[in-house]
Image 1 (cartoon, rainbow, N blue to C red):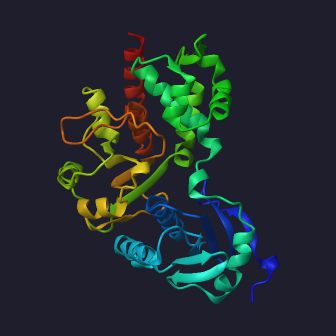
Image 2 (image 1 turned 90 degrees about the horizontal axis):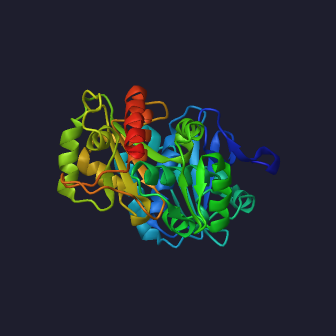
Image 3 (image 1 turned 135 degrees about the horizontal axis):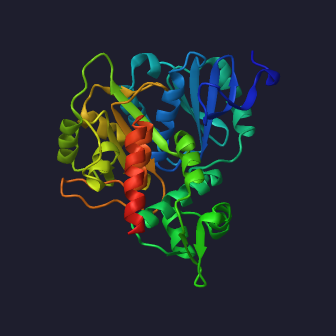
Length: 355
């Protein structure tokens, strides 16, 4: 029997920076979603716990869905879909508890008896975090900076504070707090508009260092087999006619800077509008059924980045898919360990912004 004193709350793992669990005991880790209302949020959480389950310190990850607005049959469908894209050794370590008003409604996967007995305690000690308020205020500086840089690189400055709020999805007080931290690089105007006066180099490299924590990225690779060329994956993606998916990474960088010093395409980067509830599992299956989520530290062959802001800033393309914005493409290059090419791309964008 697990006692209250055996439970630990709000903990993280050294091997999983940026990821915090609501509770844990004996190698079983809990993550609670209060009132999940859309499938996109559910899928994102499932992929996140799958990433966590790949670590040896984690024996099992239990996702608790408290008062979901998603039906049990739909949850069953999503669970079966998750099974089809995960490695069996990872999927077997995942469990879901469905609870309504603290009463157990359903379970998926193997749920240890202790977990069923004590999930109410876990829920009671978890902050009321819902899908509607899941966006962390701590990410505001990174999000505001990214949008300001897009405007600066595209010479579309200045931008009014109201527009900045509409484009990032943050309230005026949160926007104001983020701008205060960027004050030395800002030009403020009497009409309540702002722009960057110069490239905020210190803040940019802080963002690059923290990109893993402020971007919602899911990596996939084919285990033990030679991956299909990225160009072929793009062709298959165009055939599936996805909505709100843009090309980033090396492909996007070449779009903006055709002469960039890049040889080949080590991976495919896709930027996705998270609000559109795009079925990432369906996209991945169409690209290559052999693609499975990678463990932390493992290089992906396909990286999917979800953007949660209201405005995507995609650039229309003639290839059948739009292009991700310049900032996301640059972050993709850094993430793919193409740092020298990312710096070359940055120098190009800075020169373009000044002309």
